[in-house]
Image 1 (cartoon, rainbow, N blue to C red):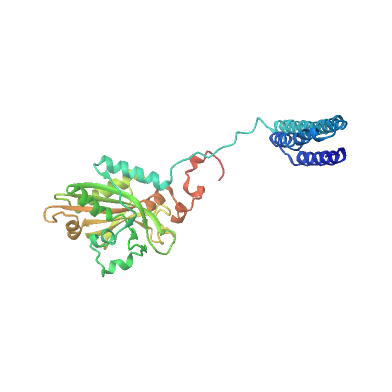
Image 2 (cartoon, rainbow, N blue to C red):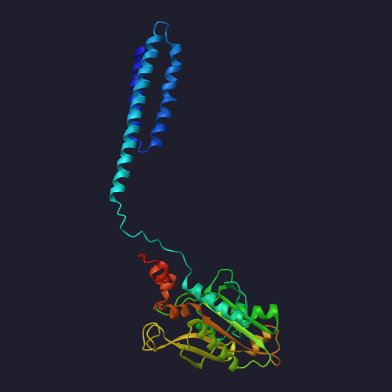
Amino acid sequence: MDLNELAHLLTRIESEAAGAVSEARTADALRAAESKITKGPLAEAMKSIKSFAAEERGQAGQNINKTKQLIAEKFAAAMDALRAAGVASERKSASDFDPTLPPARTLRGGLHPVTIVQREVERIFSSLGFAVVGGPEMETEFYNFEALNIPAMHPARDAQDTFWLTNGWLLRTHTSPCQVRAMLRYGPPIRVIAPGRCFRYEAIDASHENTFYQLEGLLIDKDISIAHLIAFMKLLLREVFHRDVKVRLRPGFFPFVEPGFELDMSCAICDGKGCPTCKRSGWVEILPCGMVHPNVLRHGKIDPHEYTGFAFGLGLTRLAMMKYGVGDIRILNSGDLRGIVQPERLGGAKV
C-alpha cells in the first residue's frame, strides 16, 4: 500500500463514520458505531504502517491520526447534540405538566363475573357440607349419555347438539357426567357440587352460547325428597342475590331425573316485564333439577331401593347475567371489559 491508496482508504472510513453518525438515534448506538470503526478499519490502517517504506511511515501515521481525530470529533458532536435534545425534551415535558390535574387512573385487575358467582356458590354449598369435585371436559359417550339414562337411540340425544371429536369422545354437553363419576368414586351418602365448562353446538342468541359454565349438584342419602330439593334451591338463590327471589317450579323432562323440574327466576334484566334475554316471557331458566333417576343410581352402583337423592344443573353463566345485569350472554365470553368488569374496579377509568 502507498500513500495514495491510504488516502482513498481514509476517505472511505470518514464517509462510513459520517453515515453511522446520521443513522444513530441513541447514545448507545453512537458508542457502538464509534467502537466498530475505531477497532475495525482504523485499527487495520494503523497496522498497515509497517508495510510502508521507511521514508513514508511518518506521513502515513500522521494521515491516519488526523482521520482518527476527525472521526472522534464527529461522534463527540453527535453525542452533544443527542444530550441537548434530551434535555430540551425533558424541559418541554416538565412545562407541559399540570400539577392541578388528577393522576392517571389505571385499571385494577379482578375476577370474571362467572368466576365470582362460582366461588360464591361454592362457599354456600361448602357451608352445607358439600364437597367440590370436578370432571374432564372431554368426555366419553358412556358418562355423558348412557350412564345418565340416555342410551344411543334415546330421542333426548337430539336436543344435545354435540361437538364430537375424532377419537370418538366428545366435549361434554353438561356437567351431569360428574354425578356418576362421584357415585362410583365415593359411594353413598354423597354431597358434591361440580363446577365446569360445557359445550353445545347450537345457535347463539342473547341467552344461549356454545361455551358456557354450569355447576352440577348432587345429594344422595336415605329419605331425600322433593321438599329437600326446593329448600336447597331457594336457599341458594337467596344467598347469591342477598334477597328473596321470585321463582317458579314447573315440570321439565330430563332423562337422568324423575320427576324433573325447571326452576325459573324472574328476569333481573327487565324485572319480569319481558326482554330478549328472557325471550319476552319475564322468566329465565336457571336451575334444571329433579330426583335422581333409579337407572342413574344403578350406573353409580347405588341401590335405588335404599337411597334417593336430588340433582341440579345450575347455569353459572346465566346466574352471573342475572346478578350483574348483563343482558346478553355473548358479552361474558367477549373479553370486552365494559361488560365483564364491575364499575367499582375500573377506578373511574374509561374503557
